[in-house]
Length: 301
Image 1 (cartoon, rainbow, N blue to C red):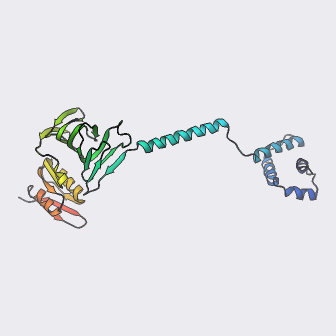
Image 2 (cartoon, rainbow, N blue to C red; image 1 turned 30 degrees about the vertical axis):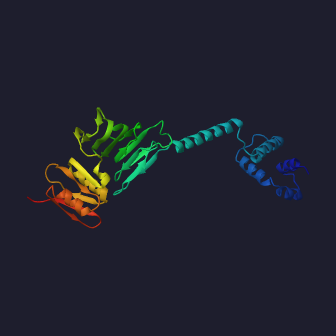
Image 3 (cartoon, helix red, strand yellow; image 1 turned 60 degrees about the horizontal axis):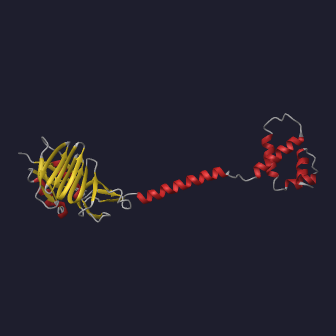
């Protein structure tokens, strides 16, 4: 018997026992039954069995026919995928190279134009290696010494100011409330807020606690390249922060009286020697405790 005839008789409850058994074994029987169960939730306004049959056929066809996306929808999906892949590829291509150092660590980086950057402890730089010719910019957090090849130019950008360089050697220190640039060769242009200066060999630019000063140096390179941190009239807390970066220790210090300034330096190779170098001139004593804890306090006069 034709499948449609069986379906009509089933809807009209006219199937014989043998036909009913055969019909229930067909592949579509469960789908028909589910549709009927759903339809029974609604009240019929007609006893037209033909209408019921045609409606069921349409429902079955919709149920069994796989869903297909229209051409316009597929094009939209394809367009979105192409854009997404393009953005991802651009991200991979233009994503910056990032280099950072940990406490008690220094490292040397060669920029795409062969200029050399030496990072001090707990510092980081980022630059676009693939897009360097169009985006000649180095982002710096911390401290770094730059040795730029003659004729090469780029910007060093920090949170507190920007340095524009052309074939020179200079040092940039950017720490909390402290921004300093020292020119050792050639010239650099430094800009921080509204303060802009052109530095030549031996000149310094310092912005500390929002106070701007200039100075001079006779050094040919920063001493930290030789594992010595040096300071010139710097708040003592800044010196202790650098000690923590170079040795990976925690310093506990309770200042007495007004903030004092420190001039001098300490070695990166021996903690005891470093502590003697910074506490003796300040009339202080220290104690090295467990878990890399260093306690410093002022002597009683």
